[in-house]
Length: 109
Image 1 (cartoon, rainbow, N blue to C red):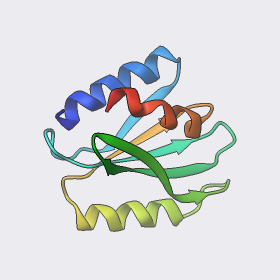
Image 2 (image 1 turned 90 degrees about the vertical axis):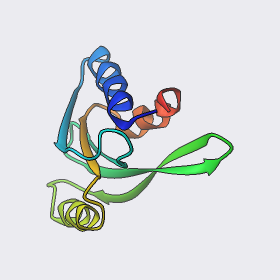
Image 3 (image 1 turned 120 degrees about the vertical axis):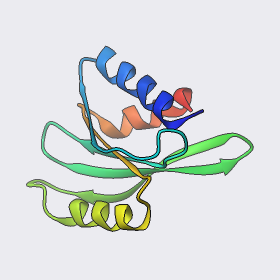
């Protein structure tokens, strides 16, 4: 599935739950990788990447966490990843429970 279509589904799912999604960096519309940044109401941030487990199975895993107030850890990580992969999408989710929401993303993949 092209990345842009997957992200359209993500936007609809987030909006349906009454939360917010912001595209921080646009990547390749067809095959760009995605990093999700989950932000809780308390200010904690976590960055998630999608891992392909084979046989059509995927998993989103936490690669970095940052406690409130948000520091530079996440920003530094995102800058580094973007320098390695200019086709990368960076998407921020401002939702109540990012870990639970992201765990439920298997249905979109």
